[in-house]
Length: 79
Image 1 (cartoon, helix red, strand yellow):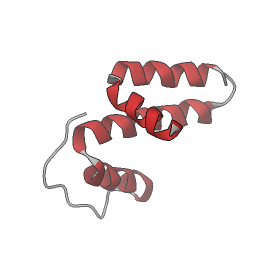
Image 2 (cartoon, rainbow, N blue to C red):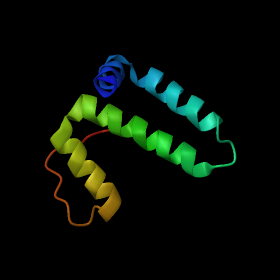
Image 3 (cartoon, rainbow, N blue to C red):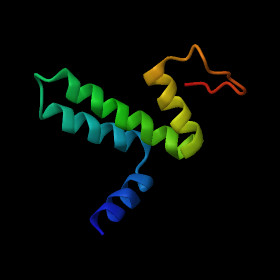
Image 4 (cartoon, rainbow, N blue to C red):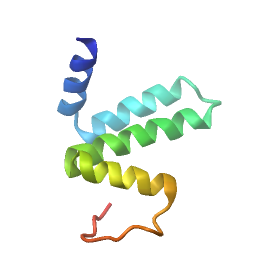
């Protein structure tokens, strides 16, 4: 039940609110650059999910991990 509430809360947050929460989390770990990196990836993924939907978000995350050399872009998405 807690996970559903957290997901619902995430959907209702604006991108700025999500970014603020990510920076607050990362501020707890000032000597860990991976905490900031992970926080920013969560922000990006959440924004992509809200704007692009799960299918395109999955494709983008896969492209980030595996490289974009083998992907065909049908419609450009501006960031």
